[in-house]
Amino acid sequence: MFDLTLSNYFIMDKIYLAVAIISEVIATISLKSSSGFTKITPSIIVVLGYVIAFYFLSLVLKTMDSATAYAIWSGMGIMLLVVYVSIMNRQLPDIATIMGVVLIIGGIFILNISTKETLH
Image (cartoon, rainbow, N blue to C red; front, side, top):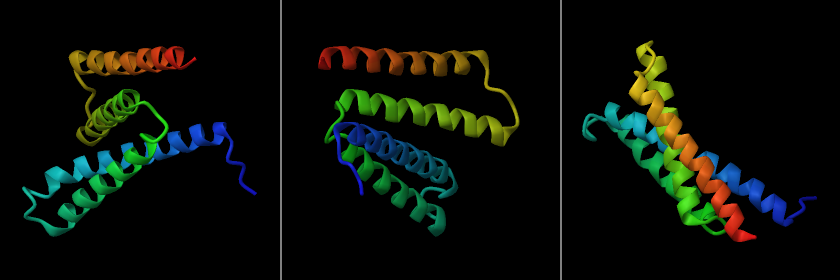
């Protein structure tokens, strides 16, 4: 029923990486609510979130270059956190933050292109 071709591995890598990113963002958001791990529910969310994030990142690293995977993971995490904080605070980020996020996204794009070129 499932075709385990090379293209499916790349699709699974993207799904695993998305799960890792989302778990890491949830854990990071909950970190502030844990008040230094003094509140049990947010603390549990933090620990589970990071465990899930690192587990799925480790799965991605089986087939993806570690520099590329980490760049995407951390860059997308930063971008999602900026969006989350902007929505929760009901204000747009300042120009420096926007420029920083744009540069991060550009760096991820360049890293992906250069990695694909070196693999061929």
